[in-house]
Image (cartoon, rainbow, N blue to C red; front, side):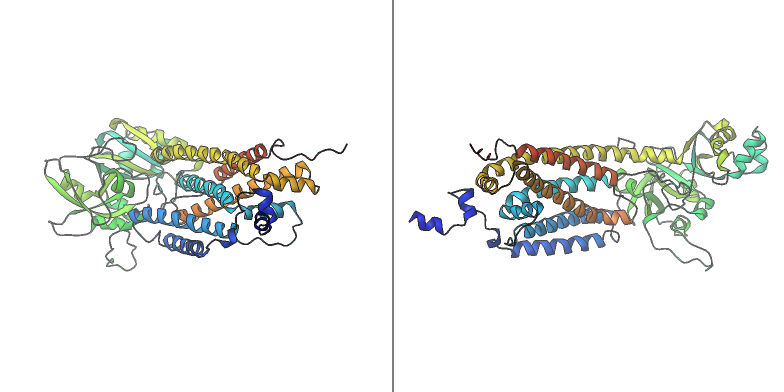
Length: 493
């Protein structure tokens, strides 16, 4: 009979909905969720640990694999926590009651946390790859190679201001001569072709080739993502760097060794990795074969194909003089460094020089990537805030379904304010859990890039987005817990 069927149902089921039984999450099959939780976290950890030991192309795939695995594993763990059998021990705090209520409707609570976690993952992961100019421009392993100024010439020049005899004939003041003499200057030959950096919106068919001298090779600098094997030096006490690959002896029919910025090789010219061969035209129109022997981390040399000066002179035999110079002004006293650009411009006045600080060039290169990232960052943050605001609709539906439960709470002495506070705590706990899950998954996915210095966590931006999401959740849950929905205890006459 109906009475016997009703007697077999729990009081909460009868209070909540007489036609539909309450969720029984502890009866759900838990093994698939356990497998996803354990497998996802292990797979994410394994993918993240291999992120620095693979090529750039594979690192992108590992990033997505690690991110998807970590997000799935953490969300599965969250589901296991929500769907665990609620304890029947007495609850002594309002927050404990809010936690227990989540267990009686795990699907709704999980949907809120999953939406917030996914949006948070995208915001944090994208924001982590924003690039910044390093504070120490003198670090030779950094993106500037320790150089402080770049001088480009309108007309190729053979003037060498590092030669004291030449410097004395340039018409410089004594102060300017001292400044130039204190700088470490290396002149570079240039082919004067197209710029293959990311600042060029068009496809480059003839990238600019730089011919670096022996002094540039000996100085070294910059950081290599990957390079061909190094042959040992005859002198065991001499340090060999990947730059020496440009001066390695080889048969005449072998391709010319070249070093490129990784972004230029991968995206600007679409050439591939170490060992990839490509062709360029020399001054006579003949085709010259080159082979990539080194890939640099993103820096001020983006957009150039770098070869040894001897190979450059063979490719462009008709070009004389130098089209660029790299300047290291760290030897100049700090209070006088602002006068270095003017002194350099005066030294090469006849060549139409343009002096640019390496910090400015690096910022202009990074601005392209940061602009794209800022767009996705803003859209992701807006989506997260709007998604959090959509929690109001979910909570309003849940509030309507729990009218009977609220009536019981009001009948046993709960004030309207405490009932509303309980609903707010339920929403805030799920939104904050989703924020934590998404941020943790993103941190695990970008950990290889953080260790290699290619990314850094935007802690201030994460705090602002998380704070805004919690405020939106607070407003949404307060609106959902309207006193027009929760039953009001009749007043005694």
